Image 1 (cartoon, rainbow, N blue to C red):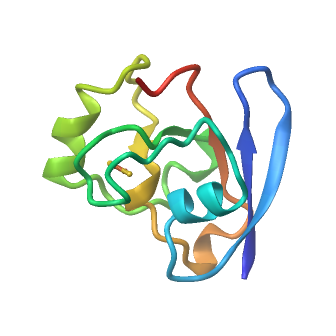
Image 2: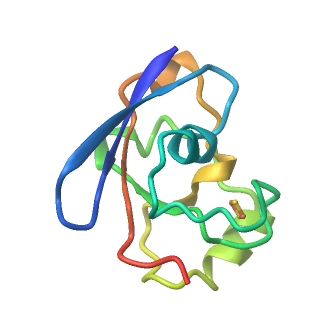
Length: 107
Ligand code: FES
């Protein structure tokens, strides 16, 4: 168990509990974070779970996959170098304290 902090578009931070092995998307939706839509349920098919990884963690998250990379090109909000699909970010102990910024829109 660890804590992930989501930064909402208005700047307020929300800490949520996350279990090792689940995705950041799963932790967000369980906590009721509305900015994570997750239309496809975590199958890397919708890009409505887009997040921006905080600079302090960009070296710790796993490398981006080809499917994720392609999907992010179609994300509703601007794609940045820190963009990831939260359904593809599996929580592991090394990501304790992970900070993810939420985009202003997902669709
Ligand atoms: S939930 Fe659909 S791509 Fe992540």
